[in-house]
Image (cartoon, one colour):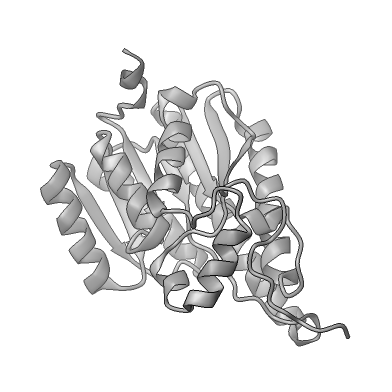
Length: 262
């Protein structure tokens, strides 16, 4: 049965930024497919409630790690937890990231470098820490969450857009380094209706974004989760080094910030 290719019983996944939004939906999708999880985020209360919900609805084991994942040492701790709790690691979802837009002249070198660290270096460091344990089990899959802004251009995104473009290419580089035993792919979401986006949207902004999106709606977190499941599972076993664009058909940014000429 073709749907059996999406089943992931007996596998273990790390999901970063898992307490809400894309990370939470992705962790739940992997658990529903049979994965046990190591989930990480900053907020213990939110993450613990999420883990309890996933355990009760799927019957899977979920280990919680609270940490500031800007700290590269904390990333190693996620792999240690996978080893100690499950004795294996099959999937890494590098979901943490994000940087607010900022006008070019207000984008300091420090801000630019922090965007790169949060969106790229964390993914590199966690993948590097995870690979030895993944190889002990025969291999696995890494999925990076990038962004449509990594290949679309608009004012205000010099930090975030450049970092996500770097993550796109890191995905391709790691795929070359880790083939054939570990596949590395990415999902590039468009405008996804997370709590973070919803908190700043008013009706006019929503109408603008949907009218500029060919499919005429914002994305759902589940749209990204099912794409990640495809790439992480045997269903995507002939995919590596690819960026899967899940963006409603965007070819231009759909929320102009209205930044003036210099």
